[in-house]
Length: 466
Image 1 (cartoon, rainbow, N blue to C red):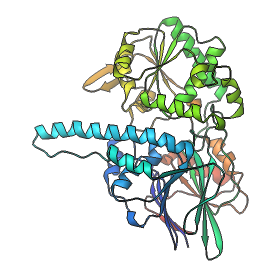
Image 2: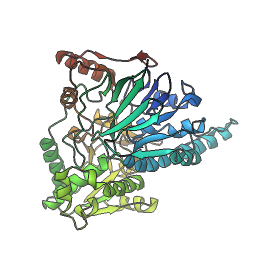
Image 3: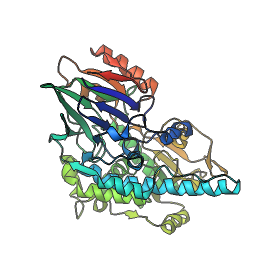
Image 4: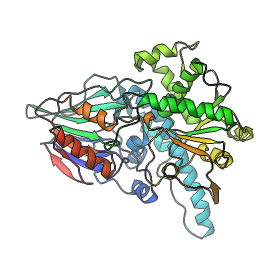
């Protein structure tokens, strides 16, 4: 008898974490950071609710930190077994975990300085760069579509989820007493209208299915409408002289935006603007994307060949990398004609806040929101119409025009989720909705019921047997 326990991403979209146990093995599926409000992020410091010493393996669907970001903490607390993922995920994970460790160490040092002045003890980072180095040594990459035994009686197969480079739908095969049962975790399913990546692969059979529900309550705006509005924003900014700021996630969204700007450039519609990618992490990720163009979809791969080297950079020749702090600060002198792409995607930190300080109060400036904004984040506040933006101790007036382009989402929409599950044959697997806000899961559950599915919404810490 296999048991699955839900430890994360049950009451929101972050902190992905599930424990699968059988008579012969214990597998951790995902080990993600909780992100968003401070009370949610405080859960990252809590002890893991399972025995780390009993784990045989860890499996990751993709590199986003809400799925992978606590791996170094797991290692620091004693885990030394393997961590399995796809090859591109392994490369992206190195970039993302090192960046996360750097931020953890910096924030801990900053807070400790303030605590010392108050006569309090120092705080420790959630994990260190050394913990990340140890974690990376135990990571192992697999190709899509190949089954591998990862523990006694357990095999795993990764299918392309089309969400970010290397993202996967995880198939776990459990063999006990001569019988095979199958657990399928959707991971984060990609938006089939997004650029560069292939559509999510379909799966036909499972005993248990874990389905993400980030956009379970709505459909994205049609991509052609999104691209038309994106082009209009670019033209308007050219005419009124304003800069365009795009807060963007370093992995996935940034590369799509570069590709879409490249399409405009190739059509002669980008005018005179220079595009600045002001994120060392996003720059490194873009280079990883270039190395794995063999898993891009065929149509966009052909389009990229219009560039001299067939790369994203040559497809958009006006793209400039801004790596150093000095180069980033120099962008403040530009009052018009710049498109600045910078992190963080939800405006919780990073260089985008620096650019907001110098631009968001300008009436001719534009902010283009191209990704999901979690409740409680500064990006969500802008989407909801905030009149001011707090940066440090300053309240900056929001006079820039705020655009929300939901069609750029890297997540499947409600209709795409429903289309994907329809490929499962009868009898339907037992279905659990995860990775969604309460309203999104409730709406999706209702739509699934109309399609003949009985979906369950697990509670934190709930266990099921199958």
